Image (cartoon, rainbow, N blue to C red; front, top):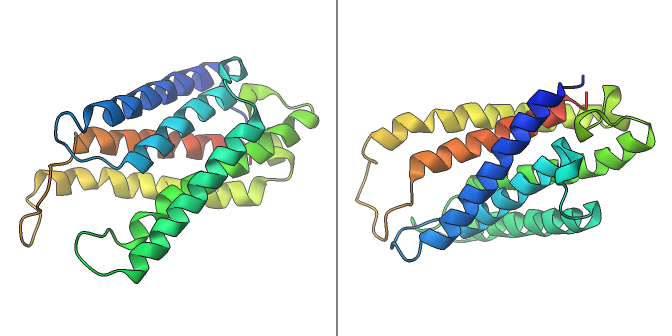
Length: 201
């Protein structure tokens, strides 16, 4: 399927807002003594700018090869974090599954970046994404989109957990920076990425 241009423009604006928000988190967290995942904020900021450029090609800031290198590095980083978390013990280390969604997002970005040139070579330019079949990328797009939609639902459910006190001993260290806004950011990224993948089916 292909999407309307107004929706592509709206989602591109949302993704640029997400990128700006991620940059603000990176700038504000340390001076305010709040905790944030700098690698996740960096990855989401890059994803926001890259997706805006894919949705509205005139917003593209970097060539595709540079984005591919960036997201390949991000995928390697989150994979290594998951492996290290699996090998270490201790409550301060997030579980390996904490990094899986970010690894999948990086993989989905690489997948879409590979699909866009294939779609354009086939003469498809709607909303900067592939049309029917996405240049032969449909099956993988479905798997990534299904995962991301499921993760968006799971993330939305965290609003309830954020309102309730965490079980067990109190967590030491600086409090997280705007956890509910971070959940909204994650939902926006997941849904937009899933939509872009669905347009490739």
